[in-house]
Length: 409
Figure 1 (cartoon, rainbow, N blue to C red):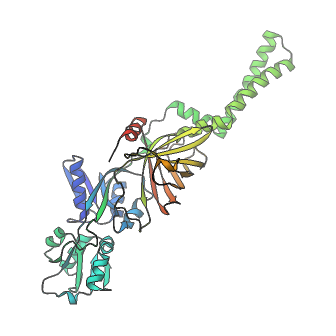
Figure 2 (cartoon, helix red, strand yellow):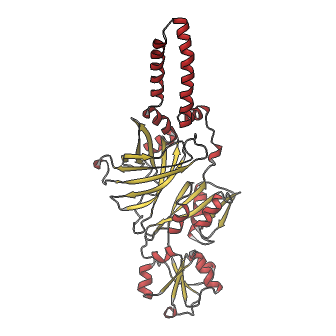
């Protein structure tokens, strides 16, 4: 059985999103598990107690869902699917016998309170606002008496009716175009299962300090045997032998230890094709016009001993989104590492807007010889005054080309 954990409880918008995503992915024999908070969803996902987790990430009025942002910003998890839902909040009281003039507080999830802020102010003035874990839970609390009779709550129509509450008003949100993005995640595959080739292991070892030390010793021993061979078979003097063999082996060693060659080998672990998703931290950013399901891809390559990041948004413009101008990277070949790159739009004419900013990414791998398959970190967009988290996932060259050539809109 496929277990899908979701933020909230029965009757919540997250449950509705989970059902829609499961249907879209043709998942059958599904058990939906209400887990109330994003932290619980991600925690159970990381412990492999559920197959998928569904959480709300952004709203067109309220902005980022902070509890979700905090739960996933440092986790290596894979994005499976997204779902956009029109969100409509209803105002309920315990019964029809309670006049609105007696209501002294409004209870609901922080996002619902944000999305209905203006209507609350207009109808109730500076009334007390009480935050609870989920909109549907506020309905349950009111029914069970955990909230006072003078409390009104905001939740979906289904949740209010399920808990036998009195409907005061429908569509209580400030903006009828109220959209929330939900994301389904799955746990990342165990990097220990990666099959590392013998060539990759040998290359990795050869260009470590220890490996280069071993190489220098091997060259020295080789020089001794070759010198004896040359002296015996060619009758060369000690000086001629030393000059010839020493020059050849010095050239070989200098070539093998050159920074460009070392970088080519070191960068093998990170160069390739990637996709990424981002979550802005700025709560003031309106996400209504964002193209939620448009893949964003990056090609990381080595050019003249330097790393270059080139990014695209797979939309109908099919123009390059950004290019790195400078990359600083910690020593590769370690279990943990970080990099920083500065980026901007290659040409202002390529899109109607110009991008520039800075990104920092980190990774954690179990075997220093393996390729890096996951990176996460932060970005700061200078031109957009936006900050948020980034999650990079390696993809195949074939998938990269399919995404790059496709119009996802």
